[in-house]
Length: 231
Image 1: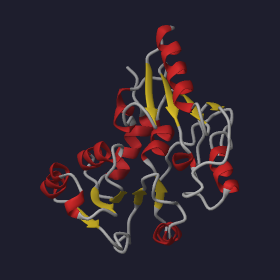
Image 2: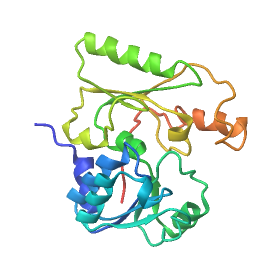
Image 3: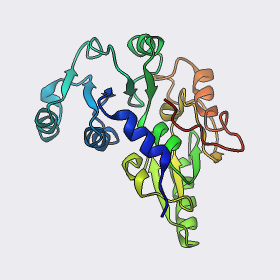
Image 4: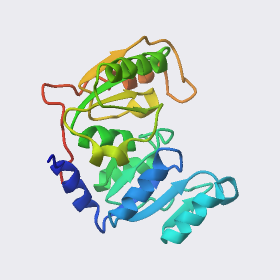
């Protein structure tokens, strides 16, 4: 029976650690449940005000007894955390994130930690156009060929909470945006770039930053992709 020792190590690390989750988007909601189950001390952050957030979600956070910081200056309380999961929309060069990283916090994302802890091969697809179609085609072809596949990233479902179910012979296929790739310290086993044209320049400082974000899909590749979580 396969045991994902790296996931077990990570789960043990989470116990009683101060963990920040920035952004209450689709991928981070199941992450919050997961962190709570691992006995982490979780604080959630979002730039929306409480009246703009889903009431059921806020009721869950209150029921869990989690601290939260919302609205303007929502990152003002981002201090003293062991690990911070940022949403792709929260730029890694945000002042508060930079300060916490200098202090010693681990800055990561749900998708990056998935890639570090998954025991199986990962195929990543990015590009300015065509990445959804390409990702879906790869997934469907592999599934038809008999592989047990997981589809995620920008499409499909949040996969981090599925890592415990994954086996070494499985395959993950991810659609990855520049937002998700920016500052990523791990790359997929197999990377596909459909094309790169000027895009999302309202988010990125300039076209060069956008290109460099896309490059992260291959710049950390080596013969043993796994740069597993280390304490």
